[in-house]
Image (cartoon, rainbow, N blue to C red; front, top):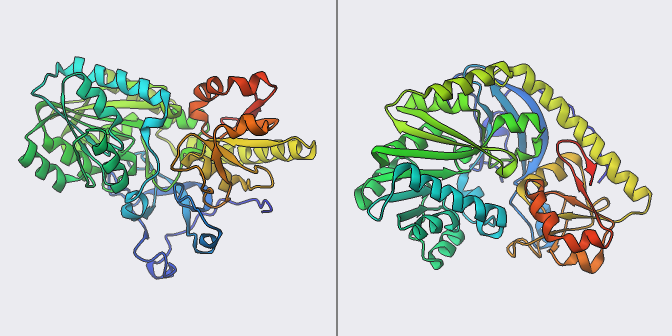
Amino acid sequence: MPHTERRLVVSSPSPANSASPAERGVHHRRETCRACGAATLRPFLNLGPQPLANAFLRRPEEFAHERFFPLDVYFCESCSLVQLADVIDPEVLFGHYIYVTGTSETIAAHNGAYAQAVVDELALGPADLVVEAASNDGSLLTCFAALGVRTLGVEPARNIAELARSHGVDTVGRFFNGTVASELRATYGSARAVIGNNVLAHVDDTQDFLRGARSLIDDNGRVIVEVPYAQDMLDRREYDTVYHEHLCYFSVTSLARLGEAVGLGVVRVDRMPVHGGTIRVWFAKDRPHEAAVLVLMAQEREAGLTSFGVWEAFGIAAAENRTALRLLLEQLRSDRRTVAGYGAPAKGNTLLNYCGIDTALLPYTVDRNALKVGTVTPGMHIPVLAADTLLARMPDYVLILAWNFADEIIRQQRQYQERGGRFILPIPVPRII
């Protein structure tokens, strides 16, 4: 696929009747901020029409029916929330899912420490209930159960919810929202903690989600969310973390303002290294934001996180990264060097499609997730092979698409490196290590 430079196009929302028949009922575009309702959205990054990042394909006959949707990022000048305006029906995105949390050693260690931190902070015991929204395969909740705490998962992906149940995790197959929260409280009682890991960014009605979580906790409970941190995204030029599932990109400031709207105060913020930089935000009912949180909000203002200009520069940096990465891969091809990928993450598909990296530059990628092996990536149609393919074929270079797990991947692939293989990291700037 020849590479073509994409120019940032600032356009008004497309009329509803302009969608193709395949898109009607699947895709719509917001005109106002999902957090504050203001009509003050300004675009700063255009990643072009993109396929759904987890819509892997299995047969060539599926290619002609592949759907592409706009992937543009906006900044709200009223509340500073960074967000997508284009919304895909969540049933299409999450009804059947192939990302599972249990395949990563990094996440397993993170989950164990996370559960221990919550149990210690809230002094949880056997009578206390922890509810996780978008609980995936139950990996986190099993850590709470191991500490003697009652657990309940809420997971809309039917295949993943069934996987969690097979692991012994009580799981309700629903999308979490205010209505579901009321039903859960009536059935299971109040929770000491409602946890949402990497899910709030997926929710179109963020106020309803948080309001529902608030209604489910008891008066001394906590709503705890983990989200990729917009400051890290900005500093590390992590434009590939943008895909249709991620509707929002949060700062402490934007989360605090959301909390205020639904009667939640931010009482604690922890910065975590996972997923390229994450914040764990603890909300409590009817409490003001803690002084330390106000300090963080002031620091974000000083860093420009709440101003449009820094995000506009981020969009320019993304285009520069695209050019540099293509030049590197094209030079390696010219030098007759072989290159493979490692990982088939959603972020990798944003990067591949935005940069126009097809099989001419990246013949295949490998992954440990058995649900992805044997598929091809959306858009660029890169074959996904088993991880042991690297040692069998020994490509000269491996482009780590799952760069947020780079340390783990390099450790696991030590033999590849010892035999002369080298790794390429694409973010924040393409570089060979």
